[in-house]
Image 1 (tube, helix red, strand yellow):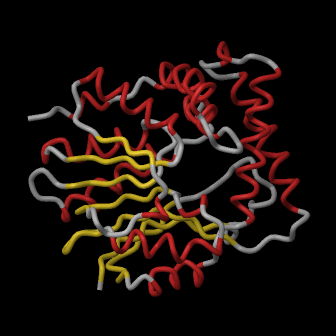
Image 2: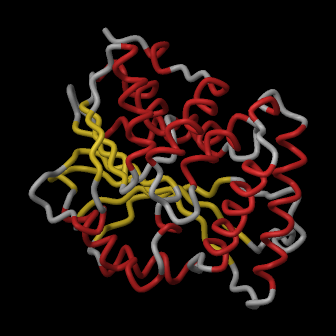
Length: 279
């Protein structure tokens, strides 16, 4: 039996290695895969570990022995290791799909070092056409990386990729609409919070002055852009309906940016885990 222990992450090693791979392989406009693992090691982004205790029992009912599991979009090792820890006893066949080569190379390196079976596939999730299907598809905040006009196509692609009897496990955030001028405020508060937290963290030694500040600036801009585009509840549910995905259950999760004045009201953001099947 595969032990869940082999999926335990070393966040400091991951932050350093992700920076190295990001410099040569990251193709993202905002260089997300340079900086995400660093932000996570500093405790700035931590939703993967916070969600694990809820996600584990939600995925397992769709899994027999050797289930086919697809992770749609991955910033670092977090989702791969989460799925591994939750499902090790079932010996999953895990496929990780992302457009950027950098996180896939990190996953391949980690998997090879620990003798873990995994397929890392560089591809556009919008291009999925149903020729390959999975028993479980995990989307963890993936939706926010697609602009609104492409989201219906994205959900249709995901729906066609579910095997009969399979389940979609979708973590998504909805938010109230904000005035355009709030975007700069979002950027500024995320940037200030991140730089302060990084300099107090155990990964502060990885800081390279102007380079790190530029990376955090890029990530802050990307975060603010994504936040401005969060769907509201109705828009999210419409995407499921249009893709003919039947929502089986949903679970509200705590979502709180303690540093954010823009999103300080409790009703500003809502985080959901939605379980759906093809109708």
